Image 1: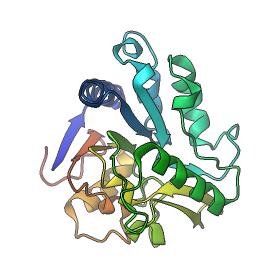
Image 2: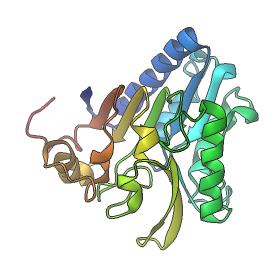
Image 3: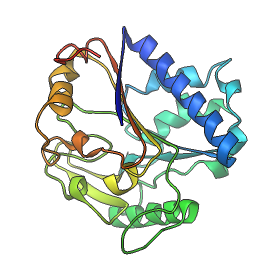
Length: 251
């Protein structure tokens, strides 16, 4: 099931995303006693994390029952300005009452294949592998936040890379020519098993690609965001008015 919500500006988009996180956390904790959240990097979620870290919103979640993961990471040290973890730590994680043992960063400073293997082990230890062969996890994520680049990439699933069409491995190391950098990413195996996946997209520069991804032909190898199709959960597109400008059917 897919849903598109359009917001007037980045502030209202951030407010909507915070409401989503709070509601998902409350429901998960009420039903299962814990809430698993995978964070996205980039500039779009920064105001979301800042709002979530401020009162009264941070008090709306029982952080002792929240477990934080990352959908992808650049292969850089955790103090590197390019690190997704550093941004989340500075803006959100250092501002809330969450235990360090509940935060699971990707060790981008390690050799790429080793970092991918270790993060796969982190996911297996937390959620339990349903089958090592199939790559599925016994327990899905409650909520995965994603962004979308101007080239249609999401997480570190880039056009033409093997991770986009992966069907067994949960976490992969990918080399991205643009930027000449290794990255670690969750694959569609994990993302599409989540209870909820939410894309956060803003800006006029994303309008053309958003239209192609949502309304165009299915070409996930070229438009990796199209590979995100949760099998049993909800897919939410939370976008600002500028990004939604090209959509044929106005939601």
